[in-house]
Length: 344
Image 1 (cartoon, rainbow, N blue to C red):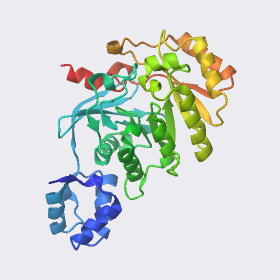
Image 2: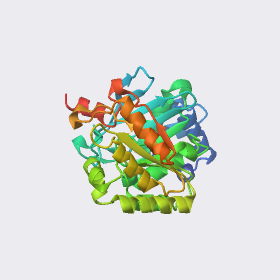
Image 3: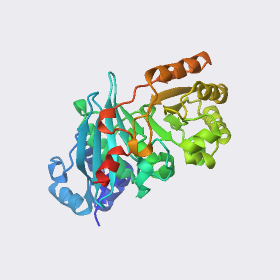
Image 4: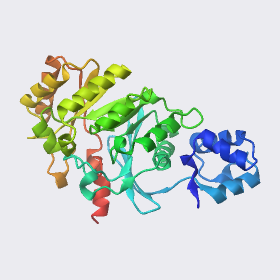
């Protein structure tokens, strides 16, 4: 049975070449063709012996996804809808900025956690993505971005990364490898809805990765309405896990706070946020007006309300950024494009 070759680390591929009585250095050549040159056909790897190319073709394939739809926003954001061999659909996004090109990738087909502002969970959870399937996304985005490169990577698309921990960590290490994509770990972010066991485990990995926590409310009642996971991992326990993570890693945590009109965007909500985060040594808050999601009855606050919320946090001593939503004209919120395609 054919296997996606990107499931293999360099060392694992070298071991296979050993068993085939082929020189180990060909593994680095294969990695270079795939990860650096973007070649998706073994026959095009011209510096490999013909018998090795034939053996690779018999045993492996390189790409497991097909592009179904690609749309581009007026702000430069591009969204991709992909289909895997088992007909499951996932999304990925390219977000260009002045000094960076960020790829946002999915880690699962669907999502178990049903956050109120997110369309990913509306069709339920199907399965985890493998390491190679995530690398498929990364390579496709890289090969279709400006200058054929990504500077940053976010595991934030469809799915919950810490619910697919082992595959995500393998994909991160492969992406970081100098023989593969060589993207610095500090330029990669894991975004979680607050899976406390995963946060504790990540603190022991010795990786200087960026950790982003989807917070979105500062009291348990509101957060449970927005994020049902809060019933299992309530705020007191989550903030405690974040304090431990900062203490063990000396790494800053980013708290994502999506502003939703009439739900979490009032000044009392801001005061509550100041109370629970003021004691954290290393943290910042990203405020993001939500994208309009009609299926979830979600809409953003107006610009004045968002600015007042930000100013209140700054006066409270917090490090705050108010980001503009991206890709609003192309259904760029997680799961929106897949949802609209599946509903046809």
